[in-house]
Image (cartoon, rainbow, N blue to C red; front, side):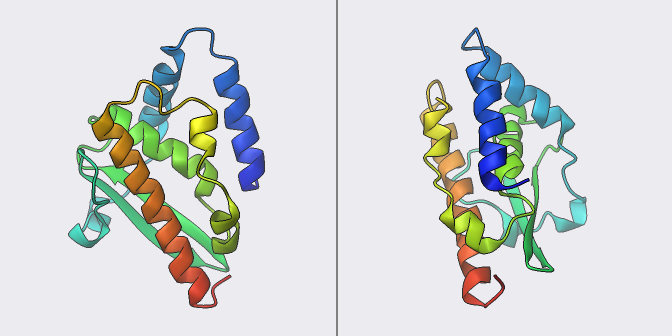
Length: 146
């Protein structure tokens, strides 16, 4: 699925929410469904700086595609909202070409109203996660790994 297709699918899900709390329920649901990563990958060099929760984002480049492994320190038990935000980002950016990630607009998350209701700490953490995803995409695109 392309980034645009993923964004359209998520846009459709968010537009169907009748109650503002539904988006948080959705994030908690995808947090619980997210497979996480092996604890051996949870190294300090992969910590997303700026997140209140300890979040790990590990890139893997294979056959022209950028694959992300993401988890929080507590895995599927805690912190669920941060894990859900990360899982939502991966629904868009995982298994994509670095050039496609760089061409995507991160403003999409504002368009669907995700920033409304996020605490400043969570909003900053989510922005840091997106920045890290784009930074990895930039690095791999500069290496000629497009």
